[in-house]
Image 1 (cartoon, helix red, strand yellow):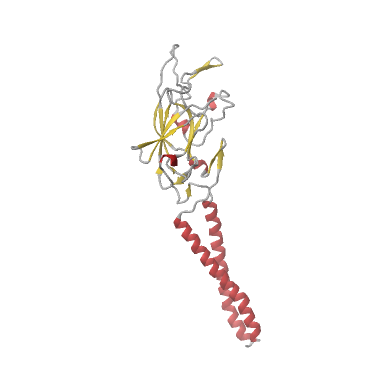
Image 2: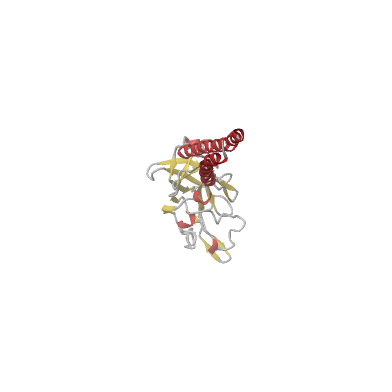
Length: 277
């Protein structure tokens, strides 16, 4: 084979190689982005890990029904700033028991009063089961000691299912223990103060009346969480939906074919070219 003939053959081969390299680079960039989204950013709040990060927490108030009474001095057991239900939304920020009175203006939790209730809703994610005995839901209760609440969950805000009660030892709930699993998605959580347990009166602090009777809810977070924004599931720290898994497999197959083609053209074509001289 002459030099001119070889160059004619080499030119289209080089073009094909450049196209394959460009495709591989594109698949590589897509794979990096996919892996970043697939592996959820585990974030720890007061010692509790949330695989989905800040998206895990309740987003809106459905209802707030505190049960308030007046003491002998005609002072309410629940009053500002502990009667603002919005304080229970988002990530926890009042749970530190070491500074319960550091600054009342900095407190962001809401009191339920004597047997009162608070209903919250997840809008950008949903509570789900983990498929095992791990805790799926965590109630952040502020103050010097944990006060118990009864916990109910609902898929539609109409039909409610009791899933136990928090206590001093553990503020988490395993919804799998009540027959639910990873295929169940819950948008609503209702908390009801246990009137038989805890402190339901307010207190005096440095000459100021503090009305924070009953359980003081700082935040409610879904440890086992499914995103409603994308198809990525955060029920565990590493979870791949079927549709994305198929795309990933296809990408790997295409990349494998491309690499095989490159090996063939660079090695075998080069070997054949030497033999033709």
